[in-house]
Every structure is written in C-alpha cells, then in structure tokens.
Image (cartoon, rainbow, N blue to C red; front, side, top):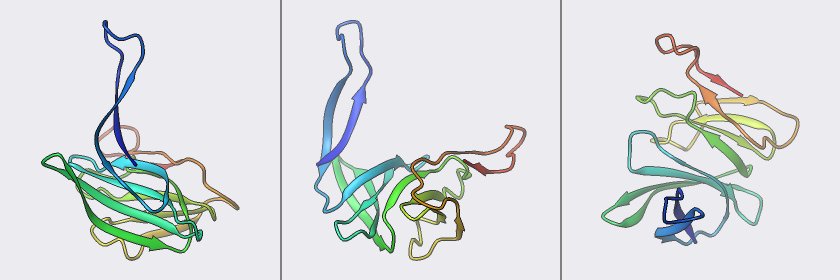
Length: 142
C-alpha cells in the first residue's frame, strides 16, 4: 500500500507528517515513483518476485487512483527520472538491475526508444538535466 504525500513541518508541528490521500495495492516491490511532469499522472518502477521489471502508469482523478498502463520487462527496474526530457516529450529514463539505461515513451511502453549499457551491474540512481539552461541545452543523464 502506498501513494503518500509528506508535508513539511509547520509552526504547530515539530516533525514532518505522512498523510495518506489515496492508496493502491501492488503485486510487486516498488523501487521508485515519479510524477509525470505537468500532469496528474505518475509512474511506478519496481520488481516482481520472479525478478522481472514492473512499470506502471497511474492517474489521480476525483480522489481515486486509476491504473492506465502496466508493463512487465525482462529486468527489474531500480530508478527513473524525467530530468533530461522536455515537457513536450516527457520521456522517462530508467536504470535496471542489469545496468541498462533505457528511455521510454510512456504512451507506448512496449519497447524503449533508446537503450545503452550504462554499468556492469545494477544502476542504483539516475538523474538528468536539460543542459546549461541556455535555451533547451543538450539533455544529459548521470
């Protein structure tokens, strides 16, 4: 069960509180979840018990969570970012347990739009940026 929003401490609270707004049961371990930029949608990445990857797209609508897409892949996902994607494309870059870097078009998640060997083993973390901030800049992933 998940999908929680952590609110920062205020003058009346000493610590941050976790407040559950909605929840959804999943049949896989979640390793990362990201809001899809400029939308009420989010993507969840993880691993099934059999070692395959889980990529799910959800939408918040009228106080409920709706599962829009679900895809199972060969390798378990560990991390993801929209950091190097334009707001128009909103491509998701992911890292998996085999060290692969993949970029996904979430409208068509059957096959990645780009794949590269990033590491010899698990990719624990990934982030991106649009470049130097001059115009769009070159997209970069680290």
